[in-house]
Image (tube, rainbow, N blue to C red; front, side):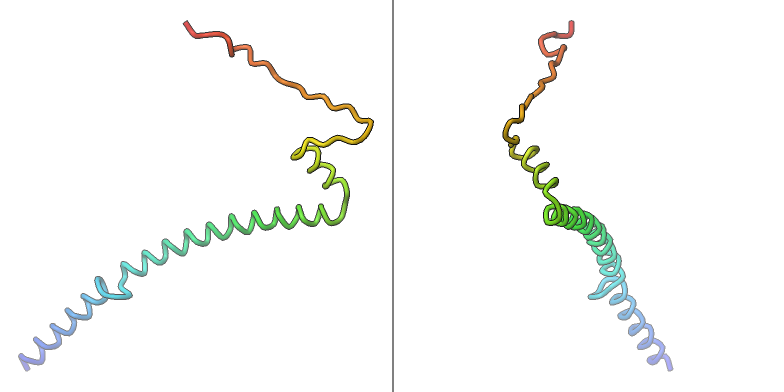
Length: 99
């Protein structure tokens, strides 16, 4: 009977060791949960970016206004007989030093 008790205690100890420190342990579970949360956050950001890209593609496919807007903003193009003005803001503190 005594040997059976000792044997059961040893088996329980080995199972506890595997539960806390072995492969697929509780520490692995928490680490994987953290990785899952990070991946889910990344996926949400990528889904948002994809929605914006789909909207851009849809605008470019459906209308010429979006194409004109991109040409003006990104390429600096203007229409024929159109006047282009570029305004520069002056920074009044650019030439001053703090004393």
